[in-house]
Structures are given as structure tokens and as C-alpha cells.
Image 1 (cartoon, rainbow, N blue to C red):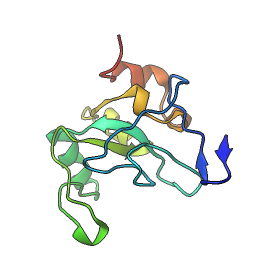
Image 2: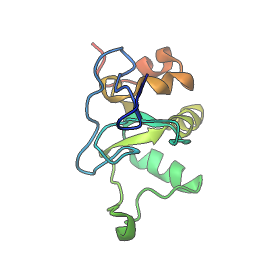
Image 3: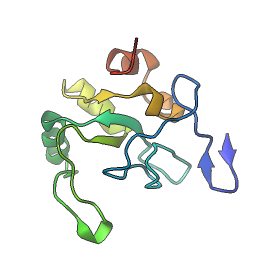
Image 4: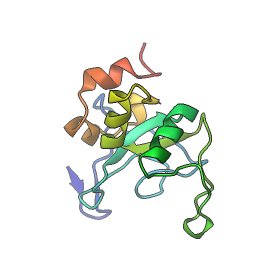
Length: 130
């Protein structure tokens, strides 16, 4: 459900709970609010909260999305292995198919990710499953 005042979809995670923050340092999210919130303008669906790895960062760079190089003009310091980051759901799924998807936080992954990634696959790769 949309929140018409903010333009964001309702902040619900894949477990149907309240969406938890992903990272404030580095600041992440389509809205740069620390959460993997989304809306119709987020064509990439930056909805999957991940713990990036060196292997994934190399994969992403090879795919044309260099997440390690700082881009000060955008306030982006570059990512390091271990950082939490809201990834595009399709990129995470590509990485999964290549065997290098980073682990995820279900509590911090937006429910919209389920439009692209099956919940079973996210649970299999979750660090916050009991």
C-alpha cells in the first residue's frame, strides 16, 4: 500500500512485520533513509538488505555497477565487505544464480522484493532466521 504523503510504499518486510533499518553507515536505500523502502519510481527495486561480500562486490563491478569506488558527488563513499546495503532485487537474484549472492536480513528486506524473489530463496540466504 502506498503512503501518499511520502510517495513510499508501506514499510513492511518480507515477514509481514515492520520494515527494520538496513544501514545508516553507509546510508542506504532508494530514499537514502537507511531502509530498503521503495515506490513506483524505484525501477531497480532496491529492496533487499544484504551484507555485501568481496565476491559479490567483484560480481557487481563485472556487471557494470561498481559499488566500491567512492563517488563524492553523490555522497557515496564506496562499499566494503561486511557493509549492509539495499540491493536491487534483480541484481541479488542474478548473483544468486551465479553462486555469489550476499546474505540477507529478512527483517530489513522490503516485501516488494517478493515480486522478484521467492521467500524460500530469501530465507535460505538469511542471517536472521531462527
